[in-house]
Image 1 (cartoon, rainbow, N blue to C red):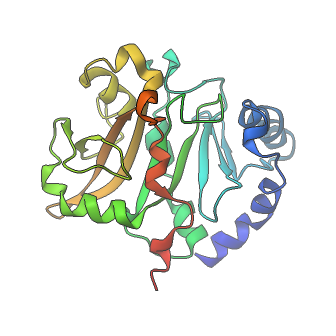
Image 2: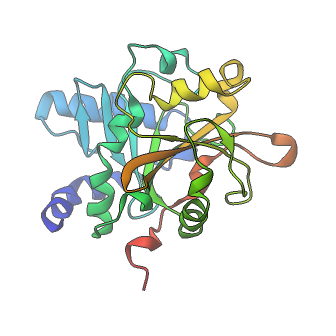
Length: 250
């Protein structure tokens, strides 16, 4: 992991010079569109991103928050969960593309993190600061990992209410074995199978956590919904640990 970590150093230093995201709701879009993509095209170096992939239309950026958090961002203009583009059958499978880059989290953490320590999260329109789709890639909170493990038997192939709140909020959960086949796209599973979700995708938040079911690798999908009346902004990122305590538990 050390060589991969050293190879990222230049990009990480650059990303820490980026203007804080909350200063401009279009900051991520400008970073990717105005800097990463042109630099990749001109110099074959996606500075300040860690990666740009022209074929899949995505960029990977080290977030300024935390040591291990990265963001997967489309290079096309896609605002977020509420954007009709995410449900287009021809759209890139952004969650699968994000999971393919989970090794970056392990490298940044300098630890062989198991799959159930790793997660992807996307916030609702009320729980985000940026108007460009981005998936947070990082470690899961240790307490959330414990709760998911204790009640993994309640996670089935159908959406059900998770038995206990996670970080104080209710989530619905379901099991999927893969993210890379037709019908397994988390956007589509939420929109198609959760009552009312398609009509109000802006209020939804989605979290994907690596899991193992009876020895077989898979994923737990978690879906939450913003409820401003109760102070819930629909921020699934709350289940992540940007300090990645699981990497160094002692």
